[in-house]
Amino acid sequence: MNTWLTDEQQRVWRSYIEAATLLEDHLDRQLQRDAGMPHVYYGLLVALAESPGRRLRMTELARHAKITRSRLSHAVARLEGNGWVRREDCPSDKRGQFAVVTEEGLEVLERSAPGHVAAVRQALFDRLTPEQQKSLGEIMRIVAEGLQPGEAGADLPWLR
Image (cartoon, rainbow, N blue to C red; front, side, top):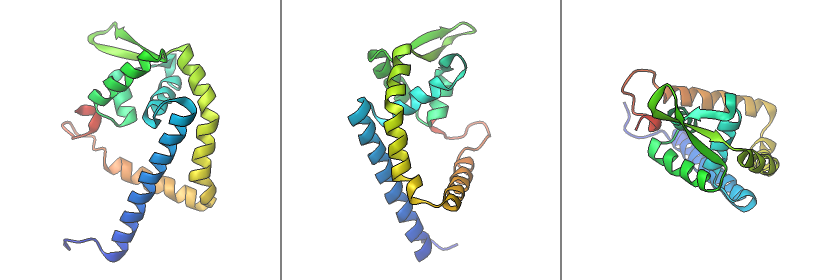
């Protein structure tokens, strides 16, 4: 096996890194400017708002956001401080907790969603044909699935 990426693989890899970094920065700045929160916090609010009862166990929320439990705990503490999320103890597991989006959190999400959707469309989807959008979705799904092994002991952020 060759130690180095081929020239074409290197070109694709560097294009991916550049685009992913610029896109995340673009979306983070838009949300900071328009809603006073980073992109990861917006994603947490969306996940909670879309969940049954507008709540998720903290471990499930970390898995959904693809972040460590420590990073999630810090983010939820900040969201709690803003009044956008609250924690509730899990009745069936004394060690478990739920994160629950509050009415104020839903209002912030509702106000910030149009600008965020516009930023995503402008930065990504408006630049791609429908065929390219479909291909990008399929490629990213394959990559994500390959990086999330199902076996016990997998080294995944939400398990750390």
